[in-house]
Amino acid sequence: MNNINKKPCVDTAAVVAEGGVPPLEGLPLPDTIIFSEIFSKLDLESLCSLACVSRALRSIVSQALSTLPSLDLSAVSLNGEILDRIIPKFRGLKSVTIDCLRLDDSSVIDILGPHLQELNLLKCASLSYNILSSIGKRCPNLRILVLELEGETSPEIFKKNLIEMLKGILCLESLSIKVRGTDLDAYDLTCIDLFLPQTLKLLKLQPVNEQDAILFVKVLGDGKNNLGQFVNFSIPSDLGCTCFTLIRLSLVLNVISDELIISIANSLPLLVELNLEDRPSTEPKLPRDLTNTGLQSLGLSRHLTSLSIVRSRLNYPVSFKRVNDLGVMLLSESCRGLESVKLGGFSTVTDAGFSSILRSCYNLKKFEVRNAPFMSDLAFHDIIGVISPLTELRILSCNLITSEAVAELAASTMLEVLDTYGCRSIADHCLDYISCLSTLTTLNLGGADITDRGLAVLGNGGLPIVRLCLRGCVRVTDRGIFSLLNGGEKIKKMLSSLDIGHMPGISDRGIQTIVSSAQAITELCMRYCFHVTDAALKMLASKRSDRINLLQRLDLYHCTGFSIGLSVLLQNSSFRGLRWLGVGSTSLVTGRDDCTVICEMRTWLTVCFEGCEVGCHDGWQFHKSNGS
Image (cartoon, rainbow, N blue to C red; front, side, top):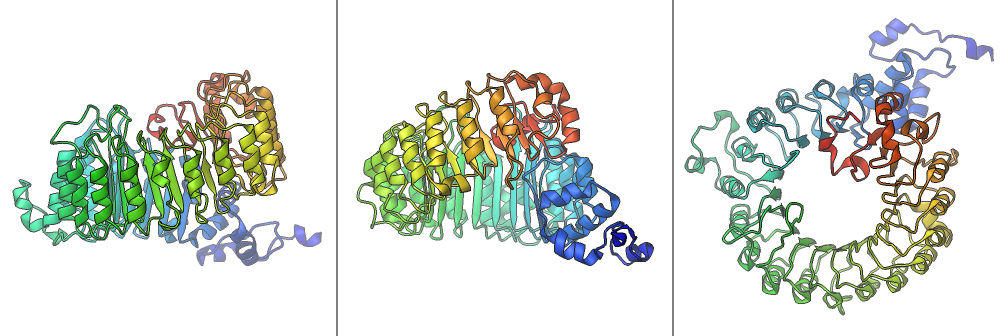
């Protein structure tokens, strides 16, 4: 006991001067043991929490963080104050990923430096476009850059800062820029074609106008020597010869057309991965639409292994009406090396077209089809033994798909992800086959016509499911949740993410089952569960503290059965591990004025009032004004 009261006999000034950390007064262990044996075994969140306790702990945590080659803070939305406390020793990091939802320019600028080779800035709701030029000036050695920006009112300022940034990072290999406007995505990103470094291998842009993208792709294909026919101003001489060798391209456009895809196929012959998504605001008309001719031209891309072509209904209920089975068959015959295929909005393609991809692409591992009204079980008939075992299968909003299609695929021993969201003809019979998929870790049955009996079968199957979505399964009740989580030991120990939203049969009893049986739950979505009351919240708040995995993300959107306020819900030590809370359209919104105080007390917590999905990945750009 006497040893504990003694102060370490160390010259603090000498230690700090030599680049070490000040000794921790009152601790009998040497700093080297504390650092190597204790701090090295703590997770990132624990280290960052310790950094806020004292100067001594802050210093030793900074040293522990400085030994990390990469740092990923995307799971939480830190504020500037806590980030500033752990930033001083970040000079050794090569890779940084940060959720910037609650950060301003000054906090992010402190992270930047020549040591960085990878920088991912996500959900930049409060950052100005000036951060772009700062990146160019401070991070000359960047190889990978990902930016998610909010659309402001001045595209010209954006373009100016973007060009300044690209002038300073000449070794860039991967660039992803996503700009989200508050109304319409209308930013012209094509100016970057003049300043992209020749080392670039991956490029992702959102949004891009189709005509600008065609010009942009032709410039990349022709090289700088032919730029004079496209632009009216000179190129800086220090950029060298732009002989691009892009192998991965991803674009979100206003429309996908034959001319665009033909330009890509002709100009970028080395492409390995191509992802195209369009969001038309009106019905596309020829020649600015996709037909069989455009799909057939992809046969020129001999190295293509991953292809995604999706027509979104975000702005208007549209589809690819000018592509039929012939176009898809020609694609599958000329691109047999495809390992991943994603097709969305092909409303006139039938089983013959989709089946041709499954039968022709022998190395296919991932297959996704969405919004295909003519795709049925016949697309998968007698498919096992003909194709290589799939690891991911996603069939979304295809109403003709039934349990028989899943039965055909149940013999696959490699399936890890199965997503049938929106396939309303999937019934209990399907779960008899799913329960045999011993490698399945992610299952989405959203909108399926399953009952409590089906969940009992799933629970007894002993599957290693980590993520499960039952959203919109209106025939499932509390009894089904009980059967799911008490039928076998494996699912109750491994399930970490559960979505029971839009299920009127779920009440406080179902939540009680989750609290008592699901041992690893970190994410729970129960939006639009009208019969869940304050009692369920109290059960969730009082979840046993002896478990390692505490609830981190909780979505309560439009749960109208609550009567308590936000400050009452988060009082004292309730929900100690919570990182994200969605409370839009509930009685908890009455405590919105207390949000600032609560977030100051819980610096790791983000409270969403906007109705976003878990984590605000779909609506972070609207959070700038509320500060949450």
